[in-house]
Image 1: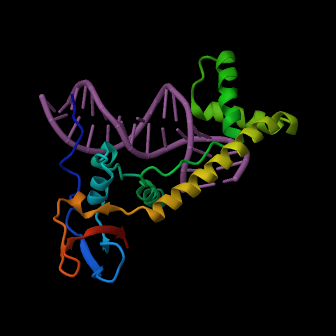
Image 2: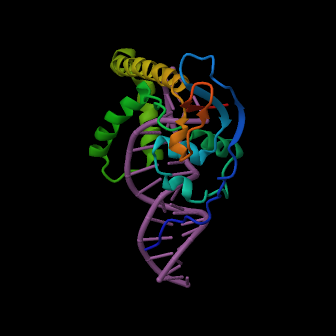
Image 3: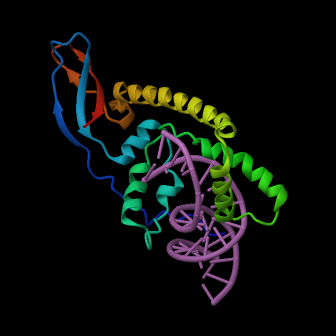
Length: 185
DNA sequence: ACAATGATTGTTAGG
DNA sequence: CCTAACAATCATTGT
């Protein structure tokens, strides 16, 4: 019955500061580029994604290592492609099944991880190579996906002004409304 | 540091 | 105080 906490979330809705704007009278397209420092809230709104519950829920900061805590913060990076599993992880997938059959009682990650690590070290290269192949293949996919992601991230504007429920500015030079594209600083 | 895995532990909010 | 809900923790190797 307990509901997710929502009121303790910090409301940092305050700042969106305009850094610079240029009149596009000489530009070929009627588009104004605005460079601002956008808030997290606006970024979410522009992407059309709801603020996740993980962010609304207050962090358990009691025993977090400072490094990890910092990492977790930076980790919230939208839909960035995830790191693919390593060869060992693919082997772990198979190993778990076999291990579960032999010892159905042991489900602890520590024990399985230890057992799997020992087994992995005893394996020959011929046995491992199949997992290496999968891993390298996945890594290649990941690299291309990451390259695409970076490319799109660089090119794609963060938001359009109309998404922010603001009216478009009127340009007296061209006598037209200007689409304002907002990039992050 | 971080990727997957799940049982366990810890923390929080609300009734 | 109790309980539901959920985040962090634990270990392992490779990149």
